[in-house]
Length: 273
Ligand SMILES: Cc1cc2nc3c(=O)[nH]c(=O)nc-3n(C[C@H](O)[C@H](O)[C@H](O)COP(=O)(O)OP(=O)(O)OC[C@H]3O[C@@H](n4cnc5c(N)ncnc54)[C@H](O)[C@@H]3O)c2cc1C
Image 1 (cartoon, rainbow, N blue to C red):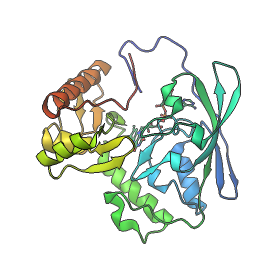
Image 2 (tube, helix red, strand yellow):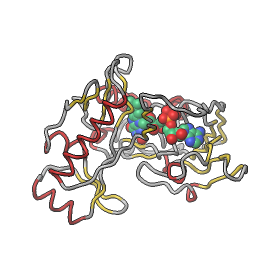
Image 3 (cartoon, protein in one colour):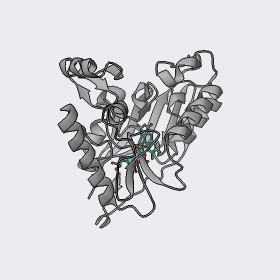
């Protein structure tokens, strides 16, 4: 989330439900638990399924909201059920995985902001799993154990994100665009090396590649906000940056992508302005 320079005029609730329970291969965690703490626990128990999601900042309760994902894994692959409080009806509701409306960085919780407060999430993991090496950065992990995979993911992430003690970021600022096969084929004709992935509803394009290689936008900046030099999907903000700098930079990038590539891109970050 990006909060506007004027702040947020309303009630902010921080969910702090804690506790992690292990029932055979199912981990059940309170929404306020640290996501990465849960991944570390799964790995230490020898349970497979969330190791590629090591190092994603945030809480367990927020993880299903945008169906967090990285390196070929998404949280939807392991969520069995979650419990939420429905603010509209005042009821406690249990959602099975199939009822969560999971998609690429989305869910029913993201589509109805403010309606559900997620309280607990259950993850079904595996004792005898195998590495998910589908993503190119992890292609050489097929013989690694869980601890080694977690260490490798954390090392890759340390290179791709800025030092959070010095600069601010929300991680990837934009979603990778999903376009029709015709648009994807036309772009592939223009840019033969453009990475493309099969996705629900079309073909997912690597926006980082387009911003960097096709448009040369790595490092583009407005005020104290800039596209990170090592990963242009990431917007970083210096200590004196204003939220407005980030918004203006995002608008500039969206305009350039639309004018030069004829595709629309959307923010992954929710802007509260
Ligand atoms: C350096 C960096 C790297 C990142 N890398 C990745 C990545 O690889 N993959 C990825 O998917 N994301 C990534 N992110 C994004 C971020 O980590 C996730 O979106 C994470 O789930 C946010 O958790 P949070 O607890 O901070 O939620 P917040 O940012 O506080 O909230 C996010 C949204 O979820 C809602 N929400 C939070 N908790 C609950 C709850 N209990 N019930 C209902 N709604 C709730 C909020 O209202 C808000 O709309 C990255 C972020 C950073 C800063």
